[in-house]
Image 1 (spheres, rainbow, N blue to C red):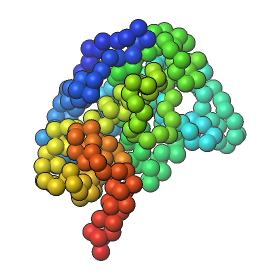
Image 2 (cartoon, rainbow, N blue to C red; image 1 turned 180 degrees about the vertical axis):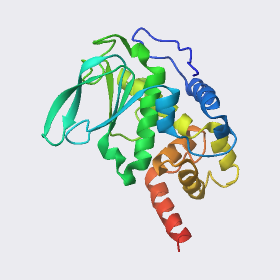
Image 3 (cartoon, one colour; image 1 turned 90 degrees about the vertical axis):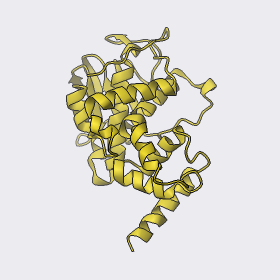
Image 4 (cartoon, rainbow, N blue to C red; image 1 turned 135 degrees about the horizontal axis):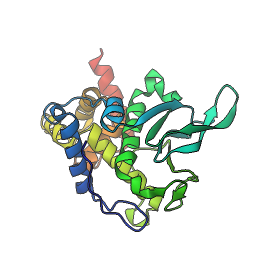
Length: 254
């Protein structure tokens, strides 16, 4: 397993540029499944989490209202909070270090893309953010509700639009996990290979994004975010692309 060498700030947060994360993702994908760098294809992200990163995986309801989609536990804990849907109450679950928790609601078929991205996002935390927690019950900064050595990830869009100079520690950690998730699910090399088949993608990215959704088994949002991170389709809005992909799909199914 490839383990990146990370330079950390005084709070244990990695100091990383986009280029740094791209290189980490490239090295990881090359080690895990080099064929994914040659032929555009979906990464088996659950297998990656379980067998490559050697994490434990737990499917549990993580809240009463679906606010948390995933969590990553760094150290052993007796007090991981989950939601008992049958009993309609929160409860504690003893859990091992290096456990990824996925909200059970994501197992529904229509949530497959969000499930895959959530898995990849939690893998990003597992790879990058061990330094955030330097010992059991000791969090280096005030991460959301983190009385235990765990990162809880809310239901949010894949991109952070806030001015990066105003990012909090939480914003920075979440952006890093998101960017690494994107670069693993959608490797730069094969995305650019696919994009080369669509010379007008900057002006009209919809056919390319439709192809990315089918080829990499990711969402429209994840596809657009990845293209923008690679300097493609920068002026395309999310709402325009979503509507365009739906129309394109309808035309192709006629």
